[in-house]
Image 1: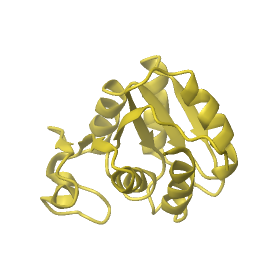
Image 2: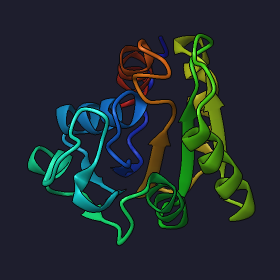
Image 3: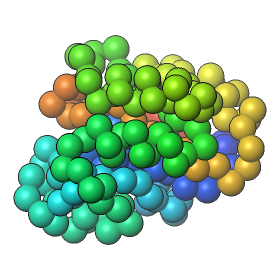
Length: 162
């Protein structure tokens, strides 16, 4: 783990789905970093299928007009300064993660894709190239696509946040 931590992230943005998104929100709260993001109408997530869904736990998120997940992903990419995608080696195919990667490229956002804690030095170097007061969108596979995504994300973010 690096000795130096990053202190330029103003807020962490996520769609709140299980796995990477949820870990990002939980770690941000632990480190007293503002959270925000778009979620599907009704607050839908794998573990919160009925309204108010994950909005009952994360009221900082805002609902998109669509109950589908693509609009949520695209709007989070649109509204962020930079995108950190966490795709553990063990993750299966993730259509939502692919939508996010494609949207980030289309919008020409600064992007970094990490596989695990071994990527912390690279993430830190990338973050150093970005402006202060950063709105960082963190995304990746949901729990059903990669059961260890939550824990790996916690390890990565805990390794970079002050």
